Length: 214
Picture 1 (cartoon, rainbow, N blue to C red):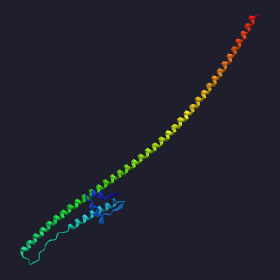
Picture 2: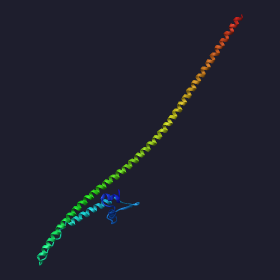
Picture 3: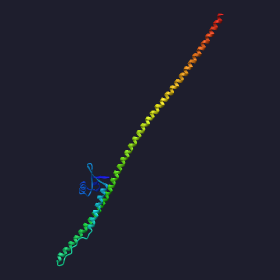
Picture 4: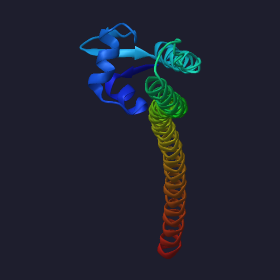
């Protein structure tokens, strides 16, 4: 997983120039992919972890006791009072700075946690986009396979219809020939019978004429 400078700036809630500054200083390792500068997920996590540890170290160093004034002997009373007041003011300011640093550290920790959540969300979005692309390719492949199968089925159906038509034509041709032959045979029998009848009529006609003549 790679992140652009714009992605990291959005995750950390800082400007792109600040992210570029971290890269230029070597605190954040990046690599060039084509014309873009990209940061891997592992390098970004390493940077966030380094920032967190640096914040903890700063808080620990700020928790050391604040310096106090210890006046030497022989000083006059007004100077002692002034030094005492100054020491108290320094301690108050130091407590304020330390509290401010603690709040700043806690805020930074929350920002880092939020940045981690942002990065996780970005990873999920990228994974969803990746899955979406995979599903789209899978659907495209299935559609192509279905089209190919449909084309094969159409060809097979056309072949089967053509074969059945050919078989029917052969069957009708045989039936036609069969009935034509039967009709021809019937016609021949009819002609033969007609000839026989005509011959009989001729015989009886001759016989009648002979009888009439006699």
